Amino acid sequence: MNWLRISWMLYRINVRARMQYRVSFLLTTLLASVVTVAEFLGLAVVLHAFGAIRGWNIWEIGYLYGVLMTAKYLYRGVGSAVNNFEPYLVNGQLDQLLLRPMPLLLSVLTSRTRMVGGELLQSLTVLGVCLGKLLGDGTAGWTAIPLTLLIVCTGTVIMFAVGLATAAVGFWTTRTEDLSILTDNASTTACQLPLSLFPDWLRTLLLTVVPFGFINYVPAMFIVRSEWGWWTIPATAAIAALSLGAALALGLRSPCGASGFGSIKVRAPDLFRCITIFRQIDSGGMIMKTMLEAKGLGKTFTTTQPKEGRLKAVRTLFSRERKIVTAVNALDMRVSEGEFVGFIGPNGAGKSTTIKMLCGILHPSAGEVRIVGLSPQRDRRRVARRIGVVFGQRSQLWWDLPLKDSFDILAAMFRLGAAEKERQLAKLEEVLQLRDFWDTPVRRLSLGQRMRGDLAAALLHDPELLVLDEPTIGMDAAAKRQIRDHLRLLNEQFGKTVLLTTHDMDDIETLCKRVIVISRGELLYDGGLDKLRERIGLPTTVRVTFGQDTSLAPGMRIGGSRQAASEEVRVVEIQGREAEVSFNRERIGVMEVLRLLSEWGDIADVHVEEPAFEEIVSRVY
Image 1 (tube, rainbow, N blue to C red):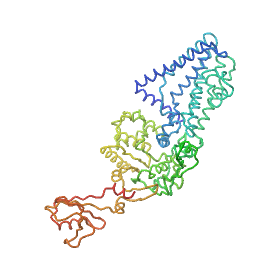
Image 2: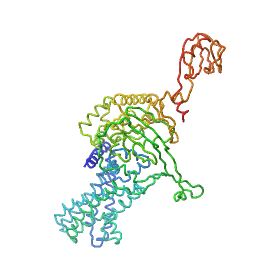
Image 3: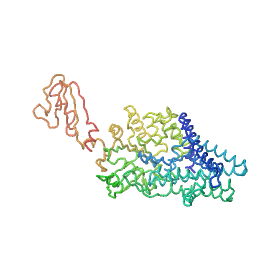
């Protein structure tokens, strides 16, 4: 299955990336070894002082500890980080995960591979020593060796299943870190000792809801105690299979109720429709003239109304008063094939919310949107194959990996063959020149280089529509100019349809022939730049230098023969022999203005300035 292949690829590449930090790796391993050895030695001292606990001696309990901790650290090495959901929510990076063609939960679980060599070595040592002692005194037979290997493997699967289920439930209901304390830390601490020590209710919990007892206690009753039958081994394997199946169904297929992201309530079923374990990419379909179309598009969020006065935080927590916030209201827009359209507005205008609805991350509260005739929400798998998205502040490249490794992972996610991937990269190389930093880790790239890498990543699967959100943010003038040149080539040579969102009006003026302006979630303008200038009517400025001093004065209205003053031409400023005048080009031409000015003296030099586009847009807002 493709998702397993991708997970294994992520693990191998992340291990290689982690090994780059050699000093950090060695220190982490050393400290982890010291801590875990001290933990077990403390347990050993207690057991030695008490001899045996309810018939379990130190070697048998050491065996329980070794099996459990070996499975735990194997699982953590692959990716136990259920807490990884927390940063994605806090930093607002949920959209980045949903846009990637990979299951959300598996993407997070494999995103931060840990190096647990020290802990794993310590637990294997404890397991080996205790098992050797049990074999030596005849407590266990030699069949205990293969059976122990088997139950360590099934234990790792059980650990992964519980971690995945914890991530799914915690992601939509509470802080995953808090929930994992119960399902991981507390449960593993309890299962280091025989379950016979605990009350019936706790023993039942550790054999059913959090089945960690099947990792070590149940099979150990047969392997080292010879008290239960052979059924314990297949029962353990069956529990592992059932746990994994249930966790996958819960985490990757089914909705898990409602959740609050900060003060915004989001329905989990809506978001889970955007997540699938199998991404069947549809590369077929008819090429349509209209690439993007929105009709009556609207999005509202429900927020909790904060209380004032004493204990306001507690009162707000339990308050049922809600406020409806309209982010986008009845927005109509249409983008045709091959267009380069600017999508602009002030902060809080609803641009990012609209972009997320166009990409399928958010579901509209009203209206509908179509990408190449398909709904991004209902046909997300097919739409994902036909769009590429770049968020200027959120890279989709792997931070510690060389650029080429990120492309390998993305190609696997989009199920591109080796030949297809190389062919597409060769085309992108002509425009983006990636080979110069092909082997450089992403963290060492400049802003301009990283953005070129992100553009290539978004275009790797050859999408028809490219959505850019602040692609030049934080760049210097040279890097901005370079990215603009690359975007122009992508549009002109490759025929990509581009929707550009930015606050840099130079980007819009340089690249876009059409602009869509929104404010407070509503459409203000949709048309060409020239028509926008005409609509605003800002004056054109002409600065002339006369050959001698002139009698013009600021505020004067000038006209032909110095008598019939024109209301259209006004003197703004006089500095020596230089005069600055303003006029509306829609009513009077530049040549006519120069003819009028020539009556006030011989003109030595002329400079014409159009109103700055940024000023035009600010008037629209």
